[in-house]
Image (cartoon, rainbow over all chains, first blue to last red):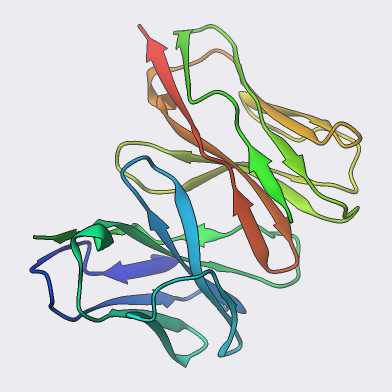
Length: 114
Length: 112
């Protein structure tokens, strides 16, 4: 079974459109995250949610909004897409306590804005 | 603020040889976790190894081992008997509470 899943894996869209990326984890983790990986492979944290509460927002434009309907899901909505939004977006999750303190990552969504 | 530095953007190693990837971090905390992740061309982020700061013993996972120097805030990854499948981007990461900090990555090439 896939631990962290994201849909879609590829997304091609035009400037100005609104799109969403879905993320689900079946690990029972407390915290979920969204990262943006640019063409230089830098991983930038965008958001994290702990028990449906936003705890990190790293100067991300307000065109990006996370939505967490429940503990197992953290979706990413992007309004008015721009060329600079083209990147790979990763969802991840982690447990607050326990022997395994690493993040588990989804497969990534490659977003291309034309 | 916590930062993670990987000073080697690119490294190469001959197949079957050993290579060490460097990572340093900045923190004032004493309780934290460190990780190495591998990202092959498939782009999936894969955990290679983890280290708890309270443990003095260096973590090992088969051909992968770390040299954890807490006082020096250094966390290097050693890959022994390198294989073609080890070619990937390697990221060092630091965890404190629910916050993770990643380095800029080291691209490893394995030469046949």
